[in-house]
Structure formats: structure tokens, C-alpha cells
Figure 1 (spheres, one colour):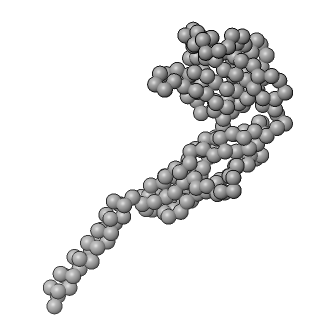
Figure 2 (cartoon, one colour; figure 1 turned 180 degrees about the vertical axis):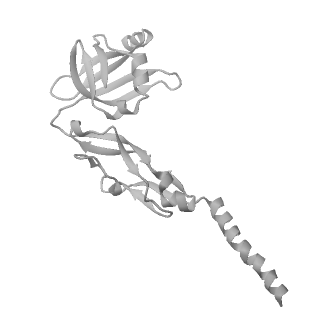
Figure 3 (cartoon, one colour; figure 1 turned 135 degrees about the horizontal axis):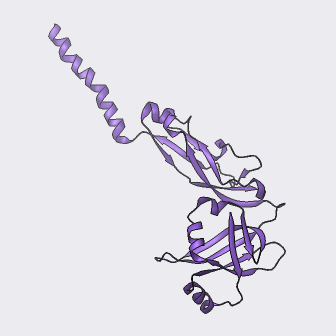
Length: 210
């Protein structure tokens, strides 16, 4: 994805406020061997870009004065109640150095899983993203979680995920739960009542036969 930015000479809260009033958002680029550079970006373009999942977990081509460099979005601040992006931080990317990023999880095939098809279970998404490390070229936009084999009472963990080539999950020594399958309490009660009904109907019939 491409991002167009402009060098920002004036700094300070007053300059940032004037910048925002003119429809721009202040930001900064840092990392690598170069000095940090303060920038400004078109607010509306940035605001809509932030709504896209890929903008948060993809290598971005950031252009300043016709020169493009690869960066990652590292942080951004928004107003407490206004639709206003206050600031954005970007980190330069070294093609030969691994990056640590949080990547979104996309859940698939829940409808064909034994938990749902056979038991009417509910599959809960315990985590919606995980942290990974990889070279910039291997960074995935998202990771697919295949739920086709999950059954009632079972869970999926990070170790169960099929990660793209070159991508490693950062677990900090913990095999975190990603999804669980359970039957709703009301559904369990209904199934128990349905099972008891034939047995109750059979008792009067047996007495009548005597």
C-alpha cells in the first residue's frame, strides 16, 4: 500500500494544532540508520486507510518528495470522541532484519466443523490477532484459522495454526488459546428434555399393557 507524506518543519503543539485545522495529520518516521523525520499526511486519506486491516499489518510504501521508503505503521492516536486522527508513527523497514508485528486472524470453516454441524455448538474466538516475527517480505496480511475439525469441548491453540513460510509465532512460552467450542446451556437443557420425553411416554404405555 502506498502512503504520501510531506516533510514537516514546524514542531510543537501549536504547529500541530494548526496542521490539524488545515486537514493534515502530524506524524514521524523513525528507525534504521537515518535520523527521525517529522511528517504530515492528508487526514482524510489516513483516516480511511486506518479502517483497512492491511494498513496495520503490511509493509507500506511511504513517499516523501518523490522518494519512496518501506515502513510499518507502529502507532497512531485518535481523538477521544471526534473522528480525528491526532498523530501517526511509522518505522523504517530493513529488508534483511526480522520484524515483530501483530497480525489479524481470519476464522474459516466453522459451519462445517463437527461442533457446529453435529452439536449446534458455538465457537468463541478467544484471540483476534497474534504476534509474529518474520522478514518483511514474508509478513502476511492475515493468518487463516481453520475450524473445520474442532469439536465440542475442544480448543485451538497457537501451536495448531498453520503459519505461512518464514513466519514464526511469538508466544513468550505460552501456547495461547485461539478458539473454543461449547454448546449453549439452553441448547443442552433442550436436548436433555427431548431425551427424557420418550422415556416418560413409555411408562404409561407399559402400565396399560398389564
